Image 1 (cartoon, helix red, strand yellow):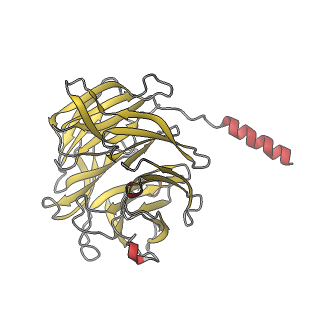
Image 2 (cartoon, one colour):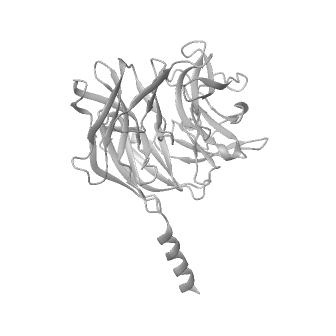
Image 3 (cartoon, one colour):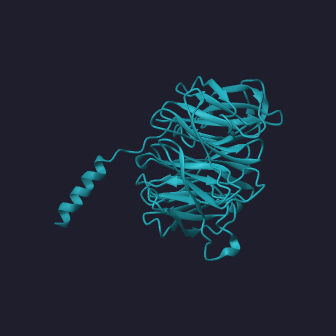
Length: 385
């Protein structure tokens, strides 16, 4: 009998699709010090020589003040939203032909909502975005907006709930389409105030359903329950975990019920954690304050277990992390010595083990627009194979 099950397991393993590597990396960056903003395509095929060859570049025709987030992964339609946050302006690039990126649109506000931050592509072809503010820079809570293919708002709803938290600033989100839900975090980009909530919305009409307060963890001294950052949906397509910038991790219970709640399940140990990704049953978290990237086993989300840790150089502060859609590579951008580089790592999706790769992309080079000098990348995503 054991031989029979071993044979079945071997057949299933053989039938599983092999990981597919992406050929390209798209990076949203700005030249320094003059600030010209651009999208660039690099050849990151495994074994390519030279690795990271610049394939194409398309600038936006104006200087940026703070190139910031893009989509966390390239949308199926090949369109990437890329944000210049301090300028309150977002650009849309068609990357269907990686050798010829096209700027196809740009926008600022959507109705009363200002300063968009994060973008998630929806199955209906639209894009959901969090907007931080209304009534001016950091004056009042923003909201959630569904954007069409031209960047126009087709649905929008306010995040304000002063009775629970007057400092709500929608930051990022996890979209759970199968349950008709969206989970948003709350943190001010400028760090001017602290927020302590997570919000739950109905996706179909963007109705705000619940504003849930982050519970105090056992050791309140470290204040893990402040400024929720980047909610993520786990491999089952319905379980949501919510990290915080203070490096706490919370598990969301009863997402579709009348009384959703949050459970503090992990403390990463550092005090500045930023963009994570989900790879199978593993959450990979960047920790800027520790110069580290950590992989957690979330087979049992209520009891996370660290399985791997990468320590970067002391001058490297990781911020952004993106996963190869059908492969095992991660791209890392950040601050300090990472400000003008993109580094790469791999994750074994079977056991969560991380490995730092020798390849990197240096953004100090000659550019097709005539600039010969440093550029600073932020959002970066792999192409769809």
